[in-house]
Amino acid sequence: MDLLLILTYSALCIAIFKIFKIPLNKWTVPTAILGGIALISTLLLLMNYNHPYTKFAREYFVTIPITPAVKGLVTEVNVKANMPVKKGDVLFKIDPVPYEAVVQQKLAALKEAEQQVPQLQAAYETAHANYKQAEANVIRTESAYKRYQKGHRDGGQNSPFTELELDNRRQLYFASVAQLDAAKAEELRNRLAYESNIDGVNTKVAGLQAELAKRNTI
Image (tube, rainbow, N blue to C red; front, side, top):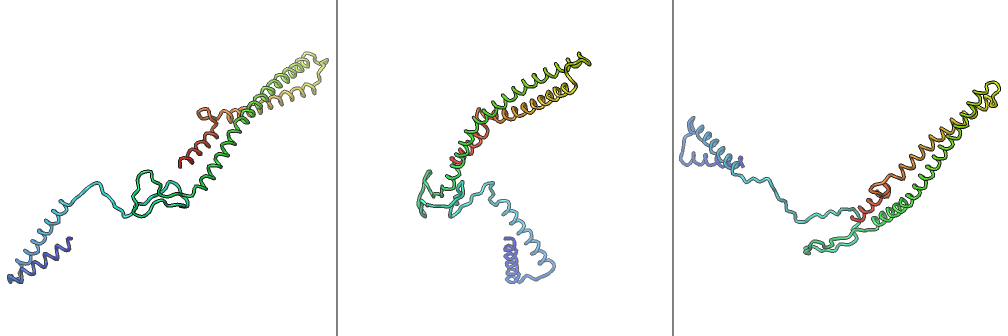
């Protein structure tokens, strides 16, 4: 735009100089140049100031792109060119077989997870019983070890229990304590696995239910 204004003004000045036979001297030429600068600058400032401006813009397309929520092979197109449609109309259909297969896999995994819940409960109860048994074994071996220790200490040289028998009882007691620790850890592991719930539902089951619900809403 500015180049067009400069060329137009230059052509106008040349025409005026030739028509009115204005001499080219140190007064006329600078006056024409300065006048042109002032005139064109004023026009550009007024045009920029009054130029339409908005914070919002609109774009218009000849066609409207439609992007589905999932990817897949389009098996059926239910609309034609320039056909009016309304909300709720089916535009096209995507092959549902891959998604149905995934849903079936999730259903199978969900059933398997639901069946594992009673197994987790049974494993926890078994581990708890083993812990109680190990605890009782510790009490029994500790009592026997202390009885042998007391008899060996009180009897002196006439003790009915030899040093070897006392050491055997001591080792049995230490072994039972180690078994108790292992049984306690196993009970804790099974209890955490069984009691890992979200709103009363096993976490694995809840996760698969959420994935299945997400698949069904697509």
